[in-house]
Amino acid sequence: MAHSLPNLNYDYSSLEPHIDAKTMEIHYTKHHQTYVTNLNKALDQHPDLFDKSLEFLLLNLSEIPEDIRGAVRNHGGGHHNHSLFWRVIGPSTGSQPSDGLLKRLNNDFGSFDDFKSEFTDKSTKQFGSGWGWLCEDRSGKLITTSTGNQDSPISSGLKPILGIDVWEHAYYLNYQNRRPDYISSFWNIVNWEEVEKNLK
Ligand code: MN
Image (tube, rainbow, N blue to C red; front, side, top):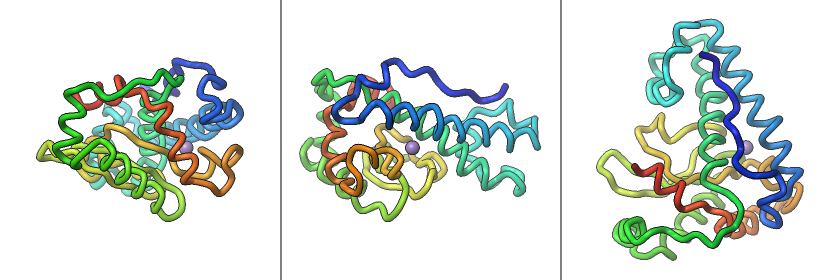
Protein backbone atom coordinates (compact mmCIF):
# COMPACT_ATOMS: atom_id res chain seq x y z
CA MET A 1 0.00 0.00 0.00
CA ALA A 2 1.33 3.44 -0.89
CA HIS A 3 2.39 5.71 1.95
CA SER A 4 0.29 8.80 2.59
CA LEU A 5 0.30 12.03 4.55
CA PRO A 6 -1.17 11.50 8.05
CA ASN A 7 -4.02 13.71 9.22
CA LEU A 8 -3.17 16.77 11.28
CA ASN A 9 -5.34 16.89 14.40
CA TYR A 10 -5.26 20.70 14.66
CA ASP A 11 -5.41 23.82 12.47
CA TYR A 12 -2.32 25.41 10.97
CA SER A 13 -2.90 28.50 13.11
CA SER A 14 -3.37 26.70 16.40
CA LEU A 15 0.33 26.59 17.30
CA GLU A 16 0.71 30.36 17.10
CA PRO A 17 2.60 32.32 18.28
CA HIS A 18 5.15 29.53 18.65
CA ILE A 19 4.87 28.25 15.07
CA ASP A 20 3.04 30.46 12.57
CA ALA A 21 0.23 29.21 10.33
CA LYS A 22 2.08 29.81 7.05
CA THR A 23 5.07 27.76 8.20
CA MET A 24 2.77 24.94 9.29
CA GLU A 25 0.88 24.95 6.00
CA ILE A 26 3.99 24.91 3.81
CA HIS A 27 5.77 22.43 6.05
CA TYR A 28 2.89 19.95 6.04
CA THR A 29 1.44 20.32 2.53
CA LYS A 30 4.71 20.88 0.64
CA HIS A 31 7.72 19.56 2.55
CA HIS A 32 6.16 16.52 4.17
CA GLN A 33 4.09 15.73 1.07
CA THR A 34 7.28 15.73 -1.02
CA TYR A 35 8.89 13.13 1.24
CA VAL A 36 5.81 10.92 0.92
CA THR A 37 5.64 11.34 -2.86
CA ASN A 38 9.33 10.58 -3.34
CA LEU A 39 9.23 7.58 -1.00
CA ASN A 40 6.37 6.11 -3.05
CA LYS A 41 8.23 6.83 -6.29
CA ALA A 42 11.26 4.95 -4.99
CA LEU A 43 9.18 1.99 -3.80
CA ASP A 44 7.50 1.83 -7.22
CA GLN A 45 10.86 0.42 -8.39
CA HIS A 46 10.55 -2.44 -5.86
CA PRO A 47 6.81 -2.77 -5.23
CA ASP A 48 7.23 -5.78 -2.91
CA LEU A 49 8.53 -3.28 -0.32
CA PHE A 50 5.11 -1.61 -0.12
CA ASP A 51 4.20 -4.54 2.17
CA LYS A 52 6.85 -3.52 4.71
CA SER A 53 6.23 -0.96 7.42
CA LEU A 54 8.15 2.29 7.31
CA GLU A 55 9.84 1.33 10.61
CA PHE A 56 11.01 -1.94 9.07
CA LEU A 57 12.48 -0.14 6.04
CA LEU A 58 14.35 2.36 8.23
CA LEU A 59 15.62 -0.32 10.60
CA ASN A 60 16.89 -2.45 7.71
CA LEU A 61 18.36 0.13 5.35
CA SER A 62 21.34 -2.09 4.56
CA GLU A 63 18.97 -4.66 3.06
CA ILE A 64 17.14 -2.16 0.86
CA PRO A 65 18.12 -2.48 -2.84
CA GLU A 66 20.98 -0.11 -3.50
CA ASP A 67 19.23 1.81 -6.28
CA ILE A 68 16.60 3.12 -3.85
CA ARG A 69 18.45 2.93 -0.51
CA GLY A 70 19.33 6.63 -0.48
CA ALA A 71 15.78 7.63 -1.37
CA VAL A 72 14.30 5.40 1.35
CA ARG A 73 16.76 6.80 3.88
CA ASN A 74 16.00 10.43 2.97
CA HIS A 75 12.32 10.37 2.06
CA GLY A 76 11.28 7.45 4.27
CA GLY A 77 13.15 9.12 7.12
CA GLY A 78 11.52 12.44 6.27
CA HIS A 79 8.07 10.84 6.25
CA HIS A 80 8.59 9.08 9.58
CA ASN A 81 10.23 12.05 11.30
CA HIS A 82 7.49 14.47 10.29
CA SER A 83 4.67 12.04 11.14
CA LEU A 84 6.10 11.82 14.67
CA PHE A 85 6.69 15.58 14.87
CA TRP A 86 3.04 16.52 14.09
CA ARG A 87 1.87 14.22 16.88
CA VAL A 88 4.25 15.33 19.61
CA ILE A 89 3.34 18.99 19.14
CA GLY A 90 -0.08 20.55 19.43
CA PRO A 91 -2.02 23.55 20.68
CA SER A 92 -0.51 24.78 23.92
CA THR A 93 -2.35 23.12 26.79
CA GLY A 94 0.26 23.42 29.50
CA SER A 95 0.60 19.64 29.43
CA GLN A 96 3.41 18.22 31.56
CA PRO A 97 5.10 14.83 31.67
CA SER A 98 3.30 12.35 33.91
CA ASP A 99 4.91 11.20 37.16
CA GLY A 100 6.05 8.00 35.44
CA LEU A 101 7.86 9.78 32.63
CA LEU A 102 9.28 12.39 35.01
CA LYS A 103 10.74 9.62 37.10
CA ARG A 104 12.49 8.16 34.07
CA LEU A 105 13.77 11.57 32.94
CA ASN A 106 15.05 12.27 36.47
CA ASN A 107 16.69 8.89 36.57
CA ASP A 108 18.45 9.15 33.19
CA PHE A 109 19.26 12.88 33.07
CA GLY A 110 19.31 14.00 36.71
CA SER A 111 16.24 16.24 36.43
CA PHE A 112 13.62 17.44 33.96
CA ASP A 113 15.57 20.69 33.53
CA ASP A 114 18.77 18.77 32.84
CA PHE A 115 16.94 16.77 30.19
CA LYS A 116 15.60 19.95 28.58
CA SER A 117 18.99 21.58 28.53
CA GLU A 118 20.65 18.49 27.01
CA PHE A 119 17.94 18.22 24.34
CA THR A 120 18.22 21.95 23.62
CA ASP A 121 21.99 21.73 23.38
CA LYS A 122 21.96 18.81 20.91
CA SER A 123 19.24 20.46 18.81
CA THR A 124 20.99 23.82 18.76
CA LYS A 125 24.37 22.37 17.85
CA GLN A 126 23.16 20.06 15.07
CA PHE A 127 25.18 21.56 12.23
CA GLY A 128 23.01 22.40 9.24
CA SER A 129 19.69 20.65 8.69
CA GLY A 130 18.52 17.87 10.94
CA TRP A 131 16.63 16.88 14.06
CA GLY A 132 17.03 16.88 17.84
CA TRP A 133 15.72 13.81 19.67
CA LEU A 134 14.75 12.15 22.90
CA CYS A 135 15.09 8.41 22.28
CA GLU A 136 15.00 5.14 24.15
CA ASP A 137 18.07 3.02 23.46
CA ARG A 138 18.20 -0.77 23.24
CA SER A 139 18.84 -1.08 26.98
CA GLY A 140 15.75 0.99 27.80
CA LYS A 141 17.67 4.10 28.78
CA LEU A 142 16.44 7.52 27.65
CA ILE A 143 19.04 9.54 25.76
CA THR A 144 19.22 12.73 23.71
CA THR A 145 20.80 12.81 20.28
CA SER A 146 20.61 14.58 16.96
CA THR A 147 20.56 13.36 13.37
CA GLY A 148 21.54 15.10 10.14
CA ASN A 149 19.25 15.66 7.17
CA GLN A 150 16.26 13.27 7.47
CA ASP A 151 18.07 10.37 9.08
CA SER A 152 15.83 8.51 11.51
CA PRO A 153 17.08 7.37 14.92
CA ILE A 154 15.39 4.06 14.07
CA SER A 155 18.21 3.32 11.61
CA SER A 156 20.64 3.44 14.57
CA GLY A 157 18.54 1.08 16.66
CA LEU A 158 16.97 3.87 18.73
CA LYS A 159 13.31 4.43 19.43
CA PRO A 160 12.38 8.09 18.86
CA ILE A 161 10.12 9.47 21.60
CA LEU A 162 10.21 13.24 21.03
CA GLY A 163 11.75 15.11 18.11
CA ILE A 164 12.24 18.68 16.96
CA ASP A 165 12.75 19.58 13.32
CA VAL A 166 15.65 22.04 13.13
CA TRP A 167 15.67 22.45 9.34
CA GLU A 168 15.32 26.16 8.55
CA HIS A 169 12.03 25.40 6.75
CA ALA A 170 10.58 24.61 10.20
CA TYR A 171 11.17 28.07 11.66
CA TYR A 172 12.67 30.56 9.21
CA LEU A 173 9.56 32.70 8.49
CA ASN A 174 9.07 33.48 12.17
CA TYR A 175 12.53 33.18 13.68
CA GLN A 176 14.94 33.69 10.73
CA ASN A 177 18.38 32.63 12.01
CA ARG A 178 17.30 32.39 15.66
CA ARG A 179 17.16 28.61 16.05
CA PRO A 180 17.61 28.84 19.86
CA ASP A 181 14.45 31.00 20.17
CA TYR A 182 12.47 28.46 18.14
CA ILE A 183 13.73 25.63 20.33
CA SER A 184 12.88 27.44 23.54
CA SER A 185 9.38 28.18 22.19
CA PHE A 186 8.96 24.51 21.23
CA TRP A 187 8.53 23.50 24.90
CA ASN A 188 5.21 25.41 24.96
CA ILE A 189 3.65 23.14 22.34
CA VAL A 190 4.94 19.70 23.33
CA ASN A 191 2.05 17.25 23.74
CA TRP A 192 3.42 15.08 26.54
CA GLU A 193 0.57 12.58 26.32
CA GLU A 194 1.65 11.75 22.78
CA VAL A 195 5.30 11.64 23.79
CA GLU A 196 4.42 9.02 26.39
CA LYS A 197 2.47 6.96 23.85
CA ASN A 198 5.72 6.64 21.90
CA LEU A 199 7.32 5.00 24.93
CA LYS A 200 4.70 2.27 25.09
MN1 MN B 1 10.62 19.54 8.17
